[in-house]
Image (cartoon, rainbow, N blue to C red; front, side, top):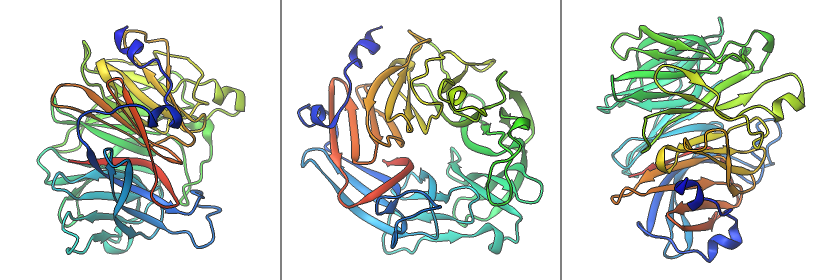
Length: 378
């Protein structure tokens, strides 16, 4: 229970300014945001624009600097570091573009539109994954004609499609590699959608976790929860702890508001079974992001409830309120050379950082509404 005890104090901006911080004095972060205050695609601010870029978190100077800002054709969602100082970003569902931004600012970004550049009927579902050797970038996609999900293996340099495999479900969202056997784990959200991405026929939802071969895309396993109205969205591997676990953030799609608000936020996969360890109703039925915490724990961003919630295997039925931040969503974790886990939480007013017993928060340098995810540039 020591990890839970260490994390028991609530993180607020007032407390964080007075706290100490250890380790790196600055960090670079790939981020997607909309200028102005509104993030909604249906009612954006007048004159607002969508961007991807890099920010530097300078913890010693207590400020965030905007290093690069590139205007993109629409709202971005997932971001992935390219391990060379640059990053990839992809449009939110139903996405029509993905981009690679090189570490060298003199090199123009590579932008690809699968529909026009590849004559594809598939649209992008908002997430990418870089292969272990950096040769491939995997994307989750949906065939706009059939509504079925696909996993596309793309050349990491050209961004062009090399192979496409069925995701064995609808609405594939996040995907991760399993380093133990080099397989691919895919969260099929299971939500039926039309060509514009609008939900329909929720009574036939069919979410699933699938394991695919990275050699030929063949199905190696498929798991489901009993409640088909719990959409599987984002995933993270645990760090530390007695057993390696996969945490999956959930999005409740029940008909009634009460059922959605009381729904669980987390599913856990132990390699054999998919389970719901906690039914704590602290997140309004919506987990925006998930990241590995200390000691085998998971941090979840309950964006609609304005909370950062921690699940720990030592107390599996509980969710600890680690943070209370308006519009908290994007989460990033890392492990220091000393083996200590650090956490970043991006929210409406800025970024909070927790490491060890210290916490701090920095304000955004300009008016910006950050999107759901971020990527640490190492």
